[in-house]
Length: 309
Image 1: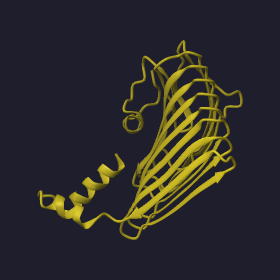
Image 2 (image 1 turned 90 degrees about the vertical axis):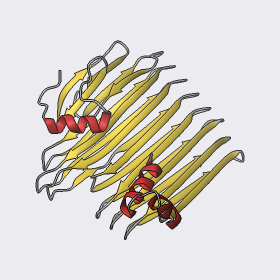
Image 3 (image 1 turned 180 degrees about the vertical axis):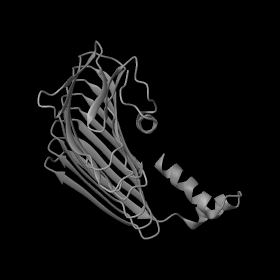
Image 4 (image 1 turned 30 degrees about the vertical axis):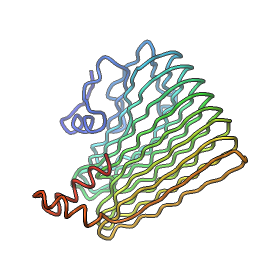
């Protein structure tokens, strides 16, 4: 069903989505700047934009427990692209959207994918959105990902976002904005690890505009070697609402981490909280695992895996 597949592309699809065969559900697979396959279903319609800049994905009202896969893979050096995908989720729908991008760069030129995803959730809609990023390849060209996400939530809708970047991406700037109507709820869980001289920056701005809206934005990161991370999250309470943002990070070697939590209350009944913690791996944790027979490096890896999962 998919065209122009190679072993590398299939392996990257499994990293991003857990599968390389999308039969039986709605999907669009993009590889090296072109569509490798697309399928709509009765409840999920995927249409290319007339100008070729991306996709329009329409999820019908009332669709329950359905799933759509929208992965992107780049395996050629020197590709640079910007893609706009718009998701229209109908009233009362319940859907999981699995996206993300993998770049395998084995050449001297930079490869870059900038994906802009915009979501409109109708009243009572529920979305679980999974976005994974990773890079591989031994070329000198960088692997660059700059995802942008815009979320517009109608009354009583729910958006759960899992944002994951564990390895191989040299440079990324993630920008996420959201606007919540009454009783809408946004939950974000970000997990990332940087190493070498990698740079990862995350910006979040969440506006709670309706009474009863709530947001919970949590980031966990590990910065190794000479890498740099920045987490900049701002919650804006424009109505009676509740908001929580948290950055919990482990710093190693010569890594650098900057946490910038921001709260803006424009209503007397806006209850907003932020937390931030940055520190190294505790020595007693290492000692405890090493007494069980692990080397220091193995103990570090166990702690990091537990922290990020």
